[in-house]
Image 1: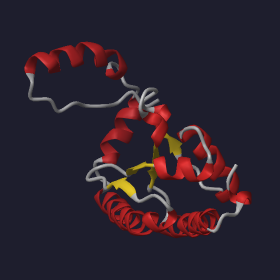
Image 2: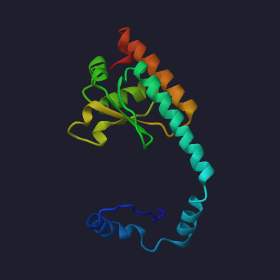
Image 3: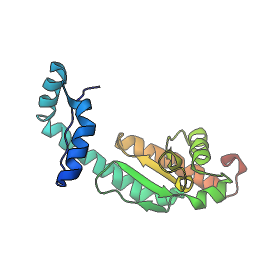
Length: 162
């Protein structure tokens, strides 16, 4: 892509190793990429709007996901991803791992989540990741569908499970 980047690293030996590794990605960036990089630093208002939307979306998911069966979650402090431990949902749905659960949720709720197995092949089977970088309306709509699905599971509807 753009071939631009930077690192902030106080550990000098680590920084030197990182520079050796990353310099091939950032050397000789095209002029257009350099101009776009400068312009990116001039978008403070747009950045602040995104930050506020992410904050609101995080609040929506943190407050609503427990009612959708995602009761064990980690509230992020700096990213726009939220991790949930889903052992309870694996048991309730009969899914063997987070990959199967993510597929089931996509099929029944039209909500895309990332299985933890994508990040940790050993322990990731019982975790999933939500992104909240979309619109706040989409966050509410996703929670509405997840809540309806979870209600169906809780009342014993096999249609909502495998």
